[in-house]
Length: 294
Image 1 (cartoon, rainbow, N blue to C red):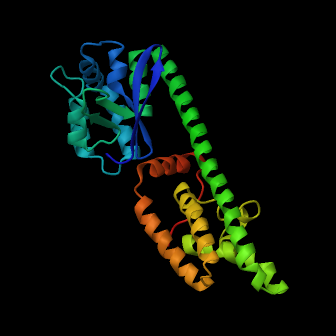
Image 2 (spheres, rainbow, N blue to C red):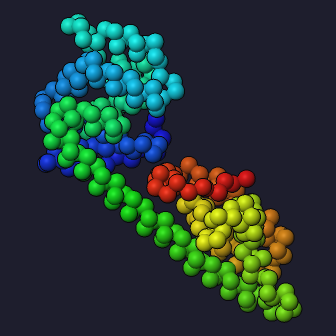
Image 3 (cartoon, one colour):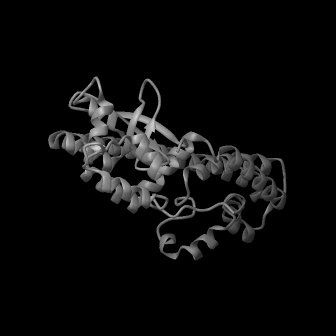
């Protein structure tokens, strides 16, 4: 679970609480929450909470709902032992024995410790103090609102950049292609050239996308429903195509070159950390159907 890791923090009544985002999911530091009760031995606070039978039942249900690889046999054994004086539980033991994903253990002097998915962390905070839980939820929601707003700025900025570059693209068409065409041909050239980019990048024309998405096509187009990665590549392709047009390269040759370039960019950028972080957030915020690259 090391992919796409972002670390941030929230302030809850003067206490700094670290938050990790891993593959699109938020994990709140139980260690930081526990420090509000015992700054010297926060790990003991977490262990005491986890050895509680009600806590184990909650964690088990959470894993059953969210983790198809959860080890039920091992969980049942822990459930039967919970409540006995000799029973102990730690985050590491829970993760190791049950293959749990709701709780993780992160090493490191700064920002390390035990983290849990937000709903589990809220349960832990409630065990510490119902009042503290409410403050935590309030700050966590504020964090999410700020992130959503920042994402929209980033996505819209790239959409605007693509539109700006499209002016360069259409100017190249007007200056180098249109003068050579008949009046009948001129009516179709701009949409045809736009589709050169669509086919090179998305593998389909605008019309094919509209036919496949009739409900969306009424108010939007293929480019409005793509992701950040494709918008970045589209912006680059518009500049490249404008150059190829000015060099007198035929439409067929340009399509081949643009498609190869799109594939090259896709390969180079598909694992880019910043783009993937924003894409994951986009999926979570909008729930839009993303256009898949063929």
